[in-house]
Image 1 (tube, rainbow, N blue to C red):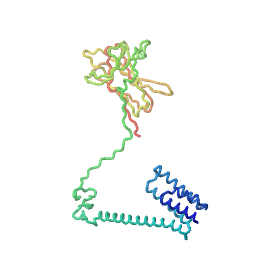
Image 2: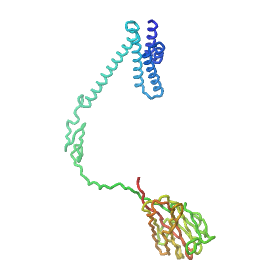
Image 3: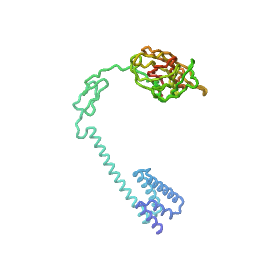
Image 4: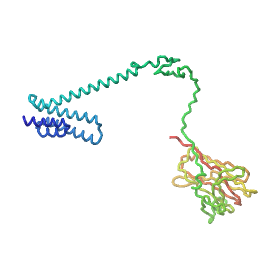
Length: 367
């Protein structure tokens, strides 16, 4: 009994000092009863789990303290059951727990009284029961308005400090459904520097003659007799000043120039090509005998490329620009690219061909 009393007292003292693990270890070493030892092992697992949660920060301080108290109380209960109730050790084990529990309950009771008192005070103050005059006492709200904390809350259709003003109703705008598509514009002028430009002399079928083909650079010299292409501002034959794509064919009879523009992976819906074409206005009498403006559409099918002219127009110097258009809607959704081309004809002199705002327009669905 003396040995039993000694280890139980020591276990209780360790627990009082906050050494839960050491208290459990001492009990486990001295107890042979299987059921009690199982409970001690369970408490030891809870204590270890609690310590892990505290170290990793997954439990806050309040919850950790509550769990620690629960484990301590369970250990005290085991110690009390092991102690002989008629001996001094039972009193030694049980008395501290009772004192602590009573003190804790007293503190909780006092805190509850204080909190409830403060809540009651603030509630009474908010309701105007303590030291406050009714702020709505002298407020008159018209047109079924209601006073709240000294201010009128007006019903729909009325406004003003006392709801005395009627709100003028304005006709509501008709409902407009949200658009399902948005416009798309592909400006070929912005892609001209990335196009592949070629010049040659062509036969009557517009095919390049052998030995006449040249690959030229964008923004080349306007004195290059192979032909040239650039973007510039110029006064045109109709007197307008425009930013143009300036293409001059090879300086020869039946000279030609053509540009292959970047591939469009998916042509937009309702696609259409438009542009204005003409000539730059010379300083003196115009000497051009006209030129042939062409647009070719290149498509792909079964791994094979196909092309065909969609615009073919011969234009002379008329002091006016011509508008050219081509409907591409049946190719919507397909992979395509365009080829812009100018053929000189019998004489290439002053064939300063101008493309004004060549674009593809269309629409695409809004997701």
